[in-house]
Image 1 (cartoon, rainbow, N blue to C red):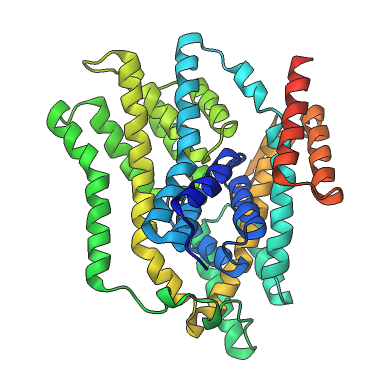
Image 2: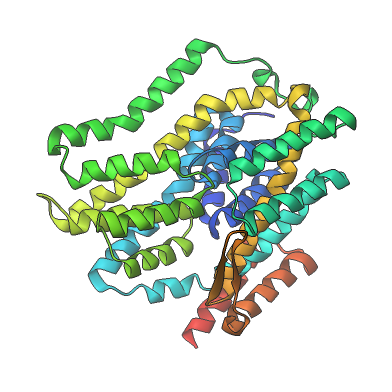
Length: 433
């Protein structure tokens, strides 16, 4: 694959970033459609291999997947452009909306602009799920793994790392008695990733990103002291980036509980407003933590003007959340690419890929629940832990827009931008009327 120029990389990942709505499921679908299907810059097998790895990491899997894809295209340059641009639109949007929120306390008009996007994303996610399923579910065994992965996550709320570990174990056992499906092989591996990186190179990468990550922490500690709001934000969101497995959905419940009940940075209703902002703006859903940092610094501004303090809180929170993501990808991607061509990992990886189909289906249903229904019921006992929609609370306008999106996607075979454009227009029209 020829290495894209910087201009080409910026163009590609700007398109991805501008249309990365809908949480992890929608963003993964957008990356798949633009990078794999339309541009054909990454193969289906390589995309799934990278997705498997990013699902295992703490933090936002979609942003890490974008960084990984960029790294494959053009090493550090590609990873920084892809990962950075994936974050930038969301950062600017959340920052602007956060200021509107604290100044006017009303963002309903802005939310209305994005009303039609959520139902459209459902169609895009289902199309990506269908195409990925065709590529990765090549036997009855893989269909069973995908179904078990979905059931484990949706009905029992098991952790994703546990589901992946069990899937890999079943894949290895399956491969010992029945010939495994070689989804990955040497022929698909670039020569540049055919050998392991040197220990020195890995050490340099690790140290570089640790310095980048900890520089703001050290600076705020020295200037403002250990009791400052900014130092507390730095430490809290650094910890959050390391302990929240399972992507944004797992992280947000942890952040909400700590930010509201422990630190008092914002109230429960304000946290829900922030989640609404993040869901209706481009970029990773985890970007809602920027709003949390904004509100915390605004409410406890130290010696600064509250509005300027809020800006610093936004920047530091975003830095602490995403710097570890770049560290993980740039340090570990060469190793992950190397094992892609090793036969010993083939059976395990193909089973993990099948389980990821179940994961994406689980994320898709979660998004349908949030996009089309106003209320849901939660079941939690000794066996089950899941939510289901209350049929009487369906949003019929959103459901109608979703049907339009499904028709455009599957019957008329329209492109991503056409679908989003038509559905956004319908959403704005519905709000105006």
